[in-house]
Image (cartoon, rainbow, N blue to C red; front, side):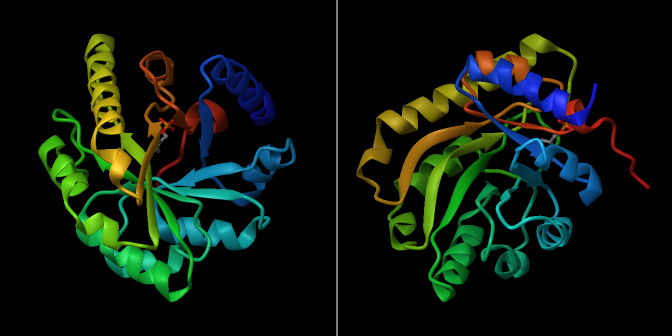
Length: 226
Ligand SMILES: *Cc1c(COP(=O)(O)O)cnc(C)c1O
């Protein structure tokens, strides 16, 4: 199947769940992305800042770019002028820098807070207590140039589907709890997106209430790492 067909099929499936698709383009060249763009698909995600910037420059300006990988504070300034959503905010220090750089160019930056799921290997993300503390604190309200739109998480890299489901369910519960409690009185927080699910586990993720999946290899094929 072609890239266009893969996207169409995924979109049809995700529609039933009112779930959005982010096509993850890391390692793939701009001409491959153009195949999807020409089928009128315009929402893409990259996990590295350098690659994100290069592609943003090489591709049409109406693409919605999502940053889904770890962001170092000294690189924030390069992405804030154009990024649509930073999904991988993993500390308050980073959020502070995003606010600072957003302020400089008078642009409010949409962010998701990345949550660390206990058994995953990645070292990035808020733990549950850290997340609740951050959301309860007054600090976020002072960040006038960021908007927290929800949470992002990755399940443990395992073939155990019950384990994956358990983790997604846990994250959905956390999301719902935050949504129904403290988020209401925070002008900077509006819990509406829950980004979870990749090529190998998006079907489980949507069943467990994901609103946004990040799918790469199921659309573009295997990646070639040098
Ligand atoms: C690479 C990546 C994805 C997509 O992975 P696939 O398995 O290719 O679908 C999703 N989320 C993040 C954070 C990634 O780095």
